[in-house]
Image: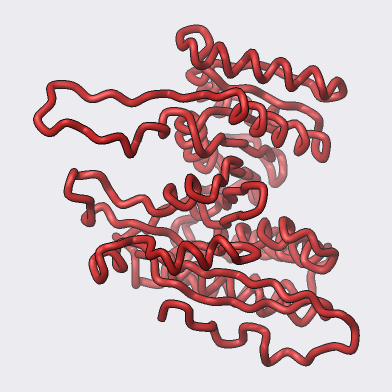
Length: 374
């Protein structure tokens, strides 16, 4: 129900005698497997919530996506959008279905509408290998593939997607937009992250062909000069597809344009077990949405076999972003629990060659959160 408080939203948690911080989270299960994987992330949040005595969570669920469009004609109702705008964070499952499209033939993409309307310019796509068996490449162990893609979310080749098209026209064009402001802020975000990691940033562009990419590289170079302790490299996008397969262990932080980031993120997910292992965050200056990188997977929806790990790890990203000492600690606890659970080859969902159901995997991670050393 739109605007409904989820059971156990924090109101049943005893109020402590000291100051308690309440975080308001908008929950958007969406379509397909979205509701199934979000339920497991909420389960994990409930497991770690008692370990955060100074924090309360109020979760409110809102209907968005293809099903909402079929019901009311709008995949992102204004009430749901406003709830996302004022929330402390948004936890999203997945939205859209290939069979449900606008009259012009385009698939519904309310998640992109959210990014653009809330100016969530920083697309964060962490890639980490949790077990050697998950990687199709040989000789990579747990933790040896560990990088993060910074995808510019609000410009690039997506910039003209809403431009009107002339029916019956003999051509169609999309514009690749790079602004100085847009390039600067995503590059700064990437360099700030590199300072916390292994101090290396790789720019991915197509500056040997496209003038827009020449401009992007020039902005990157200017920003890089402000971070003299960070190593940099510049790689063309076609070469990057090759290098991610040949030497993924050499990358730390990758920054790139919208469409390039969209494509390379899926390639990178293939290195660590697939889309069910790939979390993501879309972050702006005041708002942020956290969701798995995968889509709605209507072919397996309702079967209880979807992998919830990407959504659980997205929850960990959310808790870290909330930037409270207790939520940051809980984020580490969840990440540690996922690592501990996946260390056992018996703990696999169908996409990883195992037999665990969606709820069984969620149960394992939730239980491990209470005991894991982090």
